[in-house]
Image (cartoon, rainbow, N blue to C red):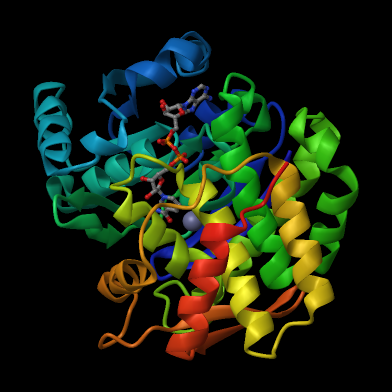
Length: 364
Ligand SMILES: NC(=O)c1ccc[n+]([C@@H]2O[C@H](COP(=O)([O-])OP(=O)(O)OC[C@H]3O[C@@H](n4cnc5c(N)ncnc54)[C@H](O)[C@@H]3O)[C@@H](O)[C@H]2O)c1
Ligand SMILES: [Zn+2]
């Protein structure tokens, strides 16, 4: 088991990474020091697969298990309210500690509950999806959606401990699993050329979940996310690089009302579009773009580009909360392993790229 440290404004915390880390989680939680009752928070679906195992690990340690619906459509304030009320009834006071066990939805909702309940109780993440292990459980972003948009209400609330055990991914459906691989490709593209090369050479192994290959790419991704958020928790600079592909991705997700793509799939498309934009803007060699697009295509077939005009997609990008004063800013690659933030795009080139993506998707 490895220990990776993350600095945050509320102190340093550890990510325990490795197979069998989950088995150590109750002990690690107890090691956090004096606390009140421990509550496990998860979803009925995650609990169906992992409940028996986690119950055994936390036997005699936790006070109650609270489950809520983890569909994206239920990632809202009603779920937060219901969960807080369940906590009152289960006897949680301000010394309570929540252990969020699940994917990004469970982590984001439980994290926001932890940030708000009794003005803040302790939080531990045990991520159970690939996206959650390499991304959402690290860095302290929590929150829920409003009908007006995604993640519009939330808080920065880092966990006291994250336990990432790749064994827990065993039951993850293949499409969800692939969705996480796109985010891993992102880590390679933005800052880790060695990880990128490893992905190119071992993609087939990773797709069949070969433990050694999978553990390597998860660990490299966690290390990079930990490094970036430790230096810039509040996204005032460096953290922006994590948004590579995301300006396009959020537009694709929003014009299809979050029904067509898993988030990682939209990021896959987003990186393709950003890569083409960077080539057209003269800052990214066509050869590197070819490598990136071919790696993304190798993961599998992406759901097709949406049937939406460039004008509509650009409007969706402008509505994104990361846009500043309506000006579109992109994170664009300069070479494999290096990106540039805050790039503005020529509107004509941008429309052409969007049209090109619509007509020539990655085929496999
Ligand atoms: N806070 C952040 O920094 C951050 C970063 C990235 C994404 N997110 C958020 O995360 C969410 C997406 O998270 P996700 O991709 O983890 O998906 P998810 O939480 O929606 O989970 C995907 C599906 O897999 C199921 N599942 C989870 N673990 C399982 C397991 N081990 N075996 C079988 N099924 C399992 C879930 O019940 C769900 O049906 C989005 O809401 C996104 O906004 C947040
Ligand atoms: Zn993402």
